[in-house]
Length: 299
Image (cartoon, rainbow, N blue to C red; front, side, top):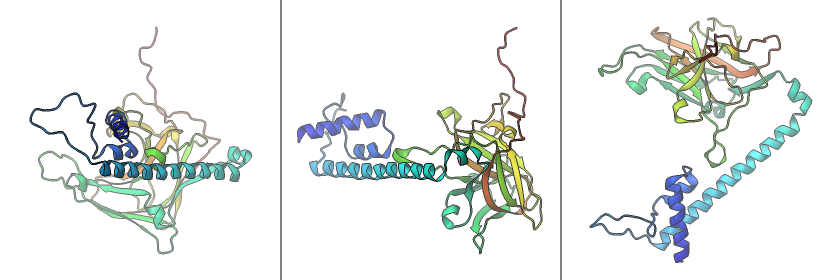
């Protein structure tokens, strides 16, 4: 039993130093190293943990491991289904793909809504499914009133962003859009402009606020329209500011997609969305629409 507890202590130390997953955090919660602690504060007593509590933590770890292995199995099954249903020829010749559609509450729950209420603003946004379950309606009220906190200078925005899909062992699913060169939306707006936000996969903490943006201008009226935006039109921003150094988007490392309304016009808004997908336009050969600056060039 003593050797078993020592093994758990060793795993808890590894967890504190390197592991950030819930699988290992479960083991460390409520269990602290006793044999390998280098310093004990004078006047404090060693925390004694009963073997029963240690065994309960171990059971939680095994249950979590079983759940994660089930997710790995599901990933493998989904991969094989996609491979069987899409032969190589169809995959190569495929020119369109629907990524997000709005036909059920499950599709609605794949998105997160946000507004300036997070900073004390008064804007409102909501999303609901059509009564015939054919599209989603994003509506609300934009209010540019600045909160009286003495810090905030600007206000008035509403946004929706797709939830990152989580895989086994807390991995984030990355979308591979390298077979396509354009983003396609079928929407019905009220004449107000929206900003598209493509968020790439984050490699390090310095790139958390990096994104690629472009504006769309849905016309008002009762008719639907399909808007096609090439990937080459998206410009690079960081922390909400356009950067001098522009880089083309990496379509094989996409994490999430978002839409933002911030046109500084108070009043109600509404945007109906049928689907958001991808399109391969063979006539579009542009790689990047913006000027690239060469740094430290050689004379």
